[in-house]
Amino acid sequence: MRVLILDIGIGNIKSLLSCLNFLGVNSLVSSKKEDMKISSHIILPGVGSYDSFLLNLKKRNLANEIIIQVKECKKPFLGICAGMQILGNISLEGSEKGLGLIDSDVTNLKNPIGALCQKVPNVGFREIYGFNKIGIFKNILDNAFFYFTHSFAFSKISENNLNLAYTKHNLPFISAFQKNNLCGVQFHPEKSQSNGLKILSNFLELK
Amino acid sequence: MKRIIFSLLYDNEYFILSRNFKRQKIGDLNWLLKNYDLPKVSLGLDELIIINVSKNKDINKFSKVIEIISQKVLIPVVGGGGVKSIEDAHTLLKAGADKILLNSLFNNDPEKCLEIANYFGKQFIVACLDYKIVDEIIYVYKNDAMQKCAEKFSSIIRIIEKFGAGEIIFQSIDRDGTGNGMDVKIIEVLNRLNLNLPVILKGGIGQKKHAFEVLRNTNINAICTSNILNFIGETFIDMRKYLISENINLASWSQNDINILRNKFNNNIDL
Image (cartoon, rainbow over all chains, first blue to last red; front, side):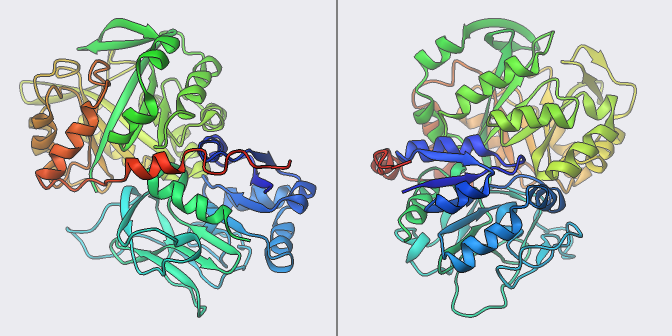
């Protein structure tokens, strides 16, 4: 196993690194294409606004290599938070174009319900539901808790046959998906105690 | 979901206890690591905040503290104290902080707060507001509560909302470190203001009942305590169990699963 944490200069690399260490996995932190090529699993952790994240990615010429690794090499790839959002087409948070690996747009969590409206950003632990307990969701219980901190999310994905997890907010949003080797999580598995460790462990078991 | 947050106060190589912002040294980083089983203690917590309250704030030195502590816990770590720029925020992020805390900067240079928020996203910024209530009037303080702000409480809150905060901590200077219970007066005020940002209350928790009294209010999303002597053994795990039994909406997870997953892959790598 050669796990690569893709460092685009703006993610919370250290948190993920210590979580993988906890699982007994030594991973490589790098932003080099060559390292992507020789890795078995790629994780793209995300903190950052949509545009700054994508600009950092494009500045390092990594966008196209991600597409190659996911589409052609079929390598297990996990995008976390902003790292998930940039896998879609566009976002209301910015004007940059996403990688288009999944047919979805990122929308704002706000909606006009009024007084009983859930707060934005969505910060803290929330439950996920609706997924099949296979792949990255293996051994995850219905309504398991994960840590979120975000203002934007995918509200729907216009593709069939995906394993999707949802989370309730003002409107339900997509909190995680798996499309064969491509995975995305809106929550932070590296900050979600036992459930986060399980998701990461399941991801590392994908071939 | 509600949250239980612990904050460590770091003052020039020492962790301290604070009472009404007067400080008492407790021990250094080695002492902390020796006396506290951080992975275990963090099982009772939702978040950990580490605040640099040193007079001369050296961000690089402080980032080493963040780096060492954040490696020991599986929960979000917030770092703050003296952050003045995107570069400072980046230093803490690189060290392992998931979010940063901004306090005086919202008074001194709100545009800079917005610039940081635009770069990292609003969810990255936790604002902290230190206040005192005297004769029903709320006064806001800055620079580690040493300086009273000229602006009114409500206008400072509007600045915090407008200039990029993702959540707000209200820290009562009078309740700080007393353990006599949290400030319920501010809750009434916050109910009236009806903020759209998550609200964290800090200062005064001495017993788990104090946490319950505050967390049962719809508009309070989290409580924060920095009594380091409470940060021992099973205190937070007990508090969590008690609050859940009192129907406070808190997340729960399995300690057993964590133990099973520890070192699961056994460094089987061929890099």
